[in-house]
Length: 98
Image 1 (cartoon, rainbow, N blue to C red):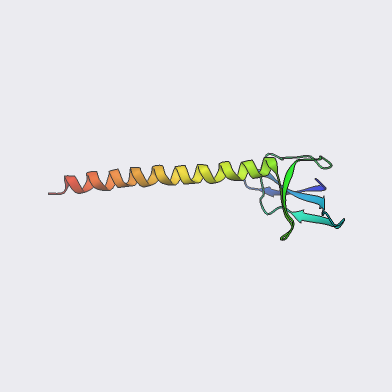
Image 2 (image 1 turned 90 degrees about the vertical axis):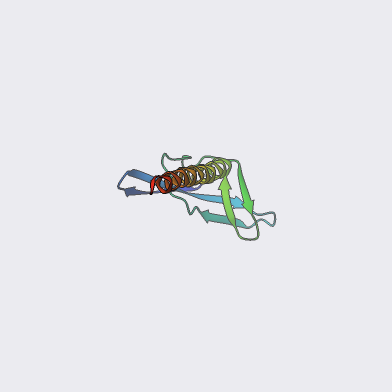
């Protein structure tokens, strides 16, 4: 973890990590995360386990990768629940029509 960028939002402070890793050839790669999160996932200077796509240069800490998976599952579950509730609502409304 090289640096943490921060910005103010309507809901408070948001953070975005900047990662650095050394490629097998010795080249140092820097990656600016594309996801703003709160609370701060890491502190500047932390050495964190992560995942690197050497072809694209994309990096994610294991914590951020797990958070991304959880976030997707949350939205998929919420979408499924809303779909079922909406279907039940429409079905009940149509049953009441004369």
